[in-house]
Length: 281
Image (cartoon, rainbow, N blue to C red; front, side, top):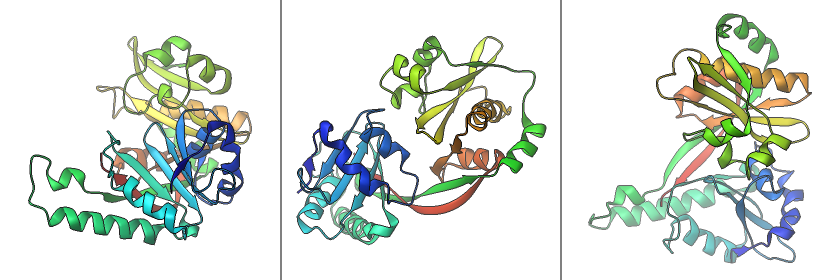
């Protein structure tokens, strides 16, 4: 079964997580208490299988994929049998752990059952599970520095993020979804906001931060896109990383064309493509 792990025991999930060779910073952030989430395991005393769900709506399954009892519960979780999931969740499986065939078999069966049912008020399409692609990148500083000469907006004002800017952010990718509160963010994280004509036009911030890595979150306000503001504010954060010995990290869906192109412009080169499952509510 999928058993909820007490947050005081989250360290039990870290040793195997360190062996997962994809970007797992969001899961590490949950396990180390940077942000909130839920962790499920097969055994609370001696776990071998782990499901880490970030409250923002991302999850990772890793460890022993041959645990039949856990996998039966996983089927119910992925297909939202209980109806508890109220918003979509994006799931990744450890590519080296044999999770993709298992998850894909669950999705195939679930979607086939939906197709066999006459659509009602809740159409089958809204409950289907779709497979997207998650991209991991590596950072090339030479490409970045060359691009900065061309695209950086020197006429914009870029300021370090304050508590007021933290609390005032709106949009889909904003710091409060990744940190407990402004105080926690300001003491451990870092962010920058580009101001244009008195408005917050674009912000880049540390979605996750470790001793040697920083994953970038970026949000631009409507009406301020297509002006190289996102590139410029991300540059401020990348420069911070380079000055402090941190590797800048970027991750996105391949289908998010804007984020994918911005990453490449900033010097991030795609290094790995993995299945990214959109679990329906």
